[in-house]
Amino acid sequence: EEEGENEYAALDYIASLPEEETKAELPPQKISMKLIAGRAFGEDALAGLSADEVAERVLALQHVRLDEERVEEIDNLEMLGVGVSHLYLQRNLIARIENLESMRGLQLLCLASNGIKVLENLLCLKSLKALDVGYNMIQGIGRGEVPPSVLYLTTDGNPLEEMG
Image (tube, rainbow, N blue to C red; front, top):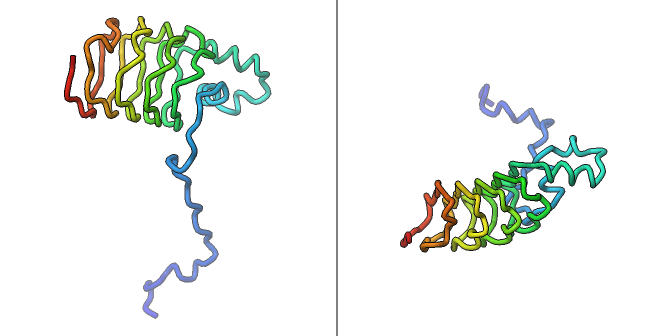
């Protein structure tokens, strides 16, 4: 055998690396107190806190990051209260914009890289200033579908045919 020909053959004691599960293989999740709190504070910071203490901390949040969490449906946001000004839901599995009525103070909503086809149910967001719906499947945006308060609208990466 030539020197260096198969230098790793004698290294049979090295265990092979475990195959990582990809996020696509994991089941979708629902928005929950546990998910919101875990992302905002980390599991270690929540250890030993009562459910009421966790809820109190979640109610005080202004920025909520739930990006890349395999969220399929916008729901259960009423647990956040009206203090949330920024909501990040990009890179999830969301197909429909819904259940945002409790987000009265929302100023920034990021829904980029989901599966959204229609802009809908946004007019209840009267304080919204920035809306990112880039990289979805939106083909048209009609007049009156975006709240008049919106100053910044990102639609890059959509198959837009009509802009009202």
